[in-house]
Image (cartoon, rainbow, N blue to C red; front, top):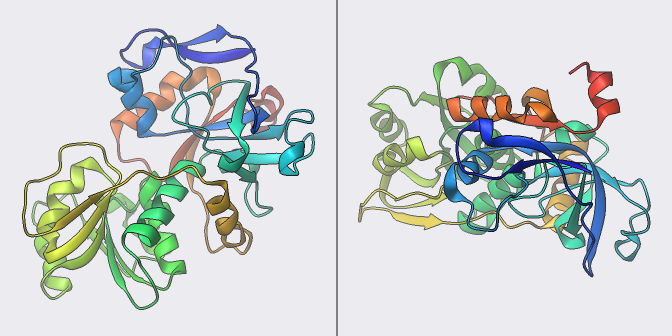
Length: 313
């Protein structure tokens, strides 16, 4: 099969199309023919030197595709069943992959199959941060930084589904978008005084914060009130402040949580915004866009040739 591989660390140019063996499933794993793969900042971070496993490796942590053969029988999945999931931080920029059955789920009827590929990591990370870490519920107020990005745009919607009032930050060109997602207030985080604006509009600072991007961590701490809880999945050095409680976390690959979100996609209360779709051999261009920042929603690589032809990409 074909796969995109990384044999040495570096810029987007190190992404190469290679011939690799079709992976063989271990017990409890499902073989998937990949239709599309999501692209995120974790992919570029690993490519630049964050990957600690053997080389070469296949990037990509999220996918949408169809079950191959009877490999999903034990999980009640038939040959050709559309599924999406988060098998790990690598392996999805490929024509086939294996995924533990508990880390994938049927694609909801309300979610287009290609766009489903852009969903698992950020949707799971947003939902778990809001529920498991911040315990957001009806009537709560939450600050979500970088509300237009991959993680943030899911978080704004999910917080609203949970019944919270959402204040979000975004660049000016994304304010209308973030309002439409459900944010009651959107603050321009390109202005140095944005944390002061948050404190002013929250009577002394946000009490619960989901900090979705590294560039907003310092501001998130300044925008929070004393004793506030700040959840972040960002892997970097956190601001040194004793005023707030930082809770770093990682989104866990849980198919059951994707299933929980299925009705939200079906009734339209949760959607994924895909800024751009690329033929997967052009993965380097998608990485350049990710590294430039300021994306609105997600990016997707279309792996299946027939789908790519239909979409004219």
